[in-house]
Amino acid sequence: MANKSKNTFTYGRKIALFGLTALVLGFVYTATISKTSQAQDDTFSAAQKEALGAFIEDYVVAHPELIIEALESYQNKQKTAEQEAFAGKFASSKDAILNSAAPWAGNEKGDVTVVEFFDYNCGYCRKALKDIVQLLDDDKNVKVIFMDMPILSPTSQEAARWSLAADKQGKYYEYHVALMNDSGSKNARKFASIAEKLGMDVEKLKKDAESKEVRTMIEANLALARDLGIRGTPGFIIGDTLSPGYIGYSAMKDIVEQTRQGGQ
Image (tube, rainbow, N blue to C red; front, side, top):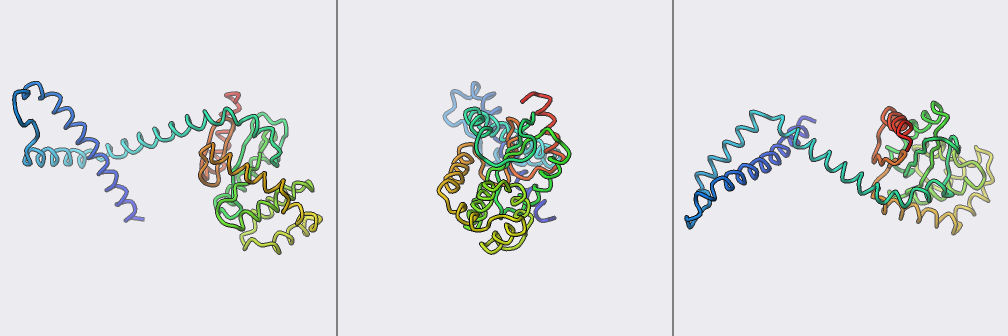
């Protein structure tokens, strides 16, 4: 952990030094160009560059908070750009998602909708399941839409097909929770075993899992995720806000409340 922190500091320091160097050089150049317009060579000498570089480095070392501020500013700009790009694309897809045939849980007429893109082989998705279950238990005015996004392995695809097939027997949420909570290997025997424990028609489940309808739904989910810029799992859309990655229950609850107050 110490080495990682040191490397992060060194990398951030280089970024800050580079940016500050460019800024200072630009300022010096702008301020002096009018005075040196008659000169044939208006570049800095090697000694001047070395001295200027040493000055800037000493300044950054004396003010390390510049590195943190620069990185935070960059990250905030990136997040803002991602949200703006997402908002433009989501506006044309929102109604289709909210009114899709995707399985859901909670209050069908809830005032806030949470859309989760997930993969059954994703450890953070398994962790996020506890947050989803708690949210549904604590907030009876939330609807959660589950968008299978099997991207991690072939077994992710198979697991998604079986879970979507379970929706045809009205058991999606129960099957989803059981399958996501299972940390063992994903295979047909496991999928069938879970179905048996839930009292489902296993043969019908197998047939439905191989249906064109289920496969088409998965392909549509993957295409939608790509279009919205969701590159990994889990990915949450709460109201009109994209929250990529694992965010935890507290953050999820806060975004739900902010969405509710904002009327999104």
